[in-house]
Length: 504
Image (cartoon, rainbow, N blue to C red; front, top):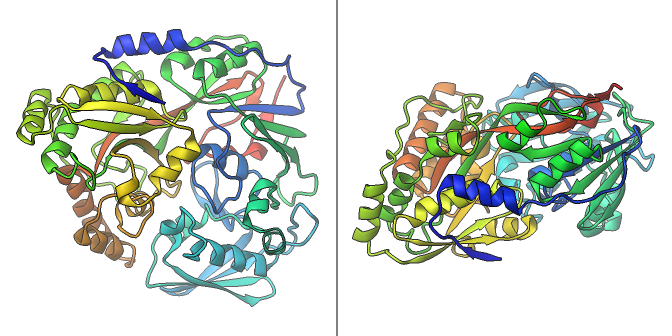
């Protein structure tokens, strides 16, 4: 779908969006042993090595266990690994649990752990997550319940990245193949896959034999409900127990509700606009600078996000290692933005702005309007999330001219943000700079924290000056929850069903 944005104010954009929302009538109230979760989209993948996006992660993280995880305070703690020991800067040995079984009854072994690591680092497998793990050189079984990982040089964020690497059963993947495994995944987590009605919902059932804390709900259903107002209406009607992706205005509607409550947390996610320097007019640095000067970040945060989020100066938040103080962006100056576009001869140039329903379209439309006021003609292109991701991870010349995004590595280290978005080896990157590649490589190849901070300061300064990306805001996430649901959201945006409880 293509929409050409007319000149409209932020308040009028908001009013139009709210009027466009219409509640969807759903089934009557659900039994207490069923947790109903409204996502924005259905998962694009349930193979945990295939995709990294919220709607997929919310579901598959309950099906699979990881080598390590984070507790609710953000501390890295054991999961399948019980302990680990660095033998050198490039070799780490993990001891594993011996009491874990996959959902088909087969034991989880060291061979499964090594297979999972080697699968995701195999370039031929082409995981979109490869850039986060490609410093791992190998995973080898070195004992009955022991796996040794070797890295290509020192890898300071190894443990932080391993909290996202799920363990898959080698026998199922090899017997069924990748596509069949994605369609019916088998894990070892607290919930089992029970069915996937494409475009509608994914159903899970509790793993009664789980080795750890069991889930409080016999079943869970993750439903695709793209319209945020419908998600709120479902909460108020009692047909939904947890809804993701609310904004401040919709959250205010359930304050004081008899059936629902808002839950929020500041995350490590950053909202941003990505510009493609391979495509005109953004191959001209003046036009990229114009975009940066055209966007009123304060206005977006205060006018659309309720002041809950924070304007961002870089692709990091204070919760990340690698966040640096004092990064200066181009000042908001719409007149200078117009002058730069005119000077570059780009007035009237049409540019496609890629987005997907998972994102807050009020922000997308406001940003598009601001960019359009420079003299560019901005066409918003809305696609489903799977199509959006396919384009975002294609060759640079095939990526969108502009794309809206919200990025989180769930690792609290800027390597997990800057490397995939800027390093030329990454499927996500559209910019290409040998200088930036070297800085990113150097920063992930040393345990010297001061050296890493220097490198990341240089990268963030490059982003501010050359504008391959425009950081917009440090994102809060707001959920709507049924009154009876007891749960504490975390900065890494995980929905761990077995960390929830229910009270009447």
